[in-house]
Image (tube, rainbow over all chains, first blue to last red):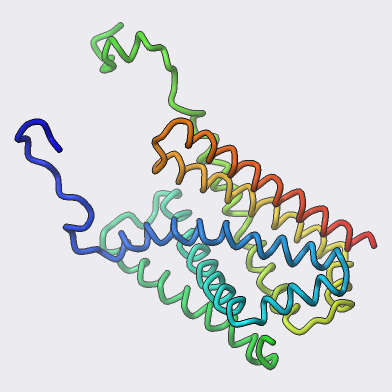
Length: 131
Length: 128
């Protein structure tokens, strides 16, 4: 608690979230999720190196309900982090800082992330589904 | 000490120097990000090609040297980028000194171990 009666700044929960703010936090959250997701990548690669039985085990997990939920989540996280990361690179080049542009490209990132995720899983389903 | 110096006498006396290591972290994070754009897109294509691959087909795919080299580049850039990103998250949110050191070490060891293990597995399949 403050020791004196200074006015204090309201914290995050006071404000209505602009889309740009949600995307900024999601960029971190998806980054952390993807870092955890590398465990599956390492598992799959090790399984491939370790023999047919290990490979079958890793594949069975990927095709299980839990595996599919994780893969779906990670595929969207990857698409989002990739699209929003490219947006960050444009900022690093000094482009797109106006409020109007920031808002517009926020929506572009959201739409692209879902379209790309949809395309990935359309490719899976076109191959007869993941099983 | 000029009149342009806004540091307090205490700050100067402590002699802590600069906070971290200049722009190195920022630049490497961007370099790995740029590298990961094509590498990640290619990795998605590879993963989609593996959906219904049996063991022999999957190994054959990684037996191509191009695939082995690109996949190695992908995992190295991936774990490097992950380490840099997680480091900033810990710097921002973990303020207990001993726990911050432990967390930073854990992230570094995890990412280095992940990269080495992945490359080892890739090379083992590629050279089999």
